[in-house]
Image 1: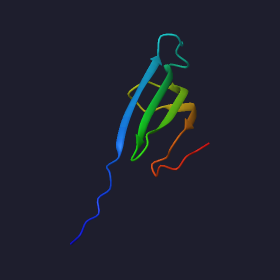
Image 2: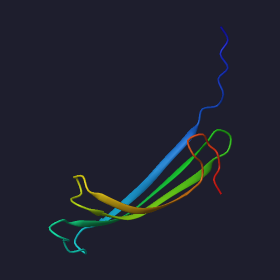
Image 3: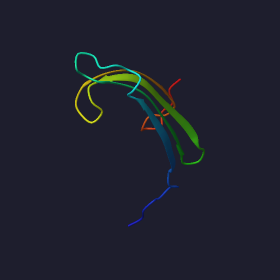
Length: 86
């Protein structure tokens, strides 16, 4: 058997999340969490290209429980198949 093996994908992921719980007062007995999250990934086989994903939102309910989540997200870069979005 003959196997053709190309160069392996190079991948780097980094991100952070900020959650503000003390700035918002409880609404009808439920707490609210305002959050911002950002993820940066760098990947490719022959040349490296970056992808950015940012999210800003509010969650009604406790952090580790189910609740209503309202957010806006911005994505720029590659999907899992390495196609480019403008």
